[in-house]
Length: 233
Image 1 (cartoon, rainbow, N blue to C red):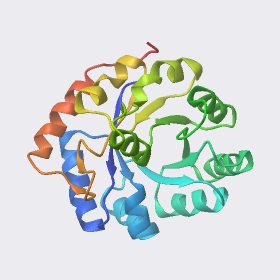
Image 2 (image 1 turned 90 degrees about the vertical axis):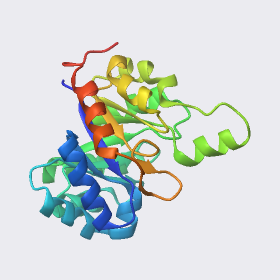
Image 3 (image 1 turned 30 degrees about the horizontal axis):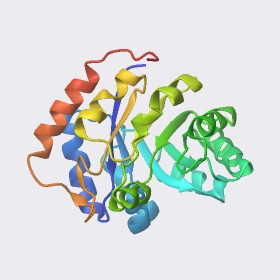
Image 4 (image 1 turned 45 degrees about the vertical axis):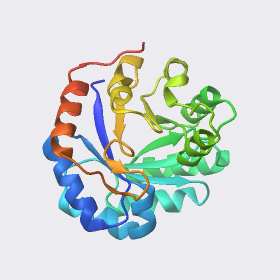
């Protein structure tokens, strides 16, 4: 598949999220993500506002679902989300419920392997249970906590090739990637590139980053889209 650029709207204000989304789409971003902070702050209202403003753009609702899988996915689908996120550490039945809701309501399911003891096995588990995509994810608190102790901060690139080679569904790498690393993801065989903190969002304040963000995003999108069809590394 051709690479897809997704912007994570990890913001806490819907007006700022709408402005950032419009700017990102002008720059060439393909998908919008209602990030977890935005969902916590604005809920279904935020997703509905994004859908009203951008009727034809895919919207990922980063629910990080751990329980109540069918209802959460159904609610977000009815609000206008096209993709929902369920955690690999959820119970098997929860993942199955989200997958069923996806089929019933026409949304695709992204399975997140964050904090799996075996990240590769977690990715395969999500595929086996019917997820449409894998999010290979090193969490925000994990990264920052390890770095604060003076240890090397883990990166999703550490095992990205292994995850890509373990599954037959598209993979997205998330978690503290630098600009250069995000652009490299398609070279690892991961066609879904998410841009968020710290690339486009101030990770400490959860607000839009300073600087000429639109020009930077346009350059990033051009480089990622230039990869063409993505195959496994």
